[in-house]
Length: 311
Ligand code: AMP
Image (cartoon, rainbow, N blue to C red):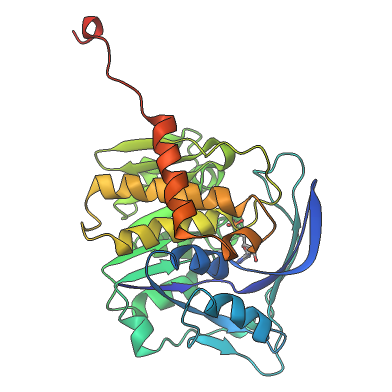
């Protein structure tokens, strides 16, 4: 099974209370691809500049990610994001966003990327997301992410893109702002009404919730004593979520598969935040992922109600 992802490919400058990096490989599509690569074949789509070199390609190739549709713009500079986190690691404070090569990006996907059965529209301008959605005629399951910037500046376009995908993954705060509904359950219902059949609310250290027309599922975050940098946690979650669904034979209408996908997303995001940027996920193993999912299951399973309460 093949999964195509379009999104930002970036250099990030990040400061947290626990350290900083002045220039590290990042971007929504990069974090997503690395996470998804543990489950299925991944093709990454997006532009980079001349400053994106062998070292950066090597990180992707080490996980067998197909980079044929990375467009290297001669004379251009790669997307750059600078941000910081205070002790509330759930909130990223953007200091600078330089679109650079993204300012003139017109996605042109190769036939192989268009034919992929799974598609993820990682966080970029929603018009671009839709252009890619329209090109990917082979996709039988598509999902997307977004952010406050686009909710504030391109809401109508974003709502149209939401109407064209099967699943939406957003932070709880983004869901509330998008829908004007302070209650998360109502906010998720409002997004389901826009077209998708599943909504995932990412809640940072509080975990994630899955909403479909008939089901609500909630999983806490994997408890960690050391969190260094949350950058990319949402994309890592999405990468494992979609990757798991893509690698799973059961089909995406299976709500039990969606729940397990939430567990894989949760485990992957927990690895991502243990170190800066892509540092931890780069040297992760499938065994470590499986062990953490099993531990999550043990932590969240509990026994049946006592007979007296069963009514
Ligand atoms: P998250 O998973 O939400 O922590 O996403 C982190 C990634 O989003 C970083 O690696 C940034 O490069 C990327 N990013 C930040 N701002 C934007 C933006 N406006 N458009 C696309 N990607 C962005």
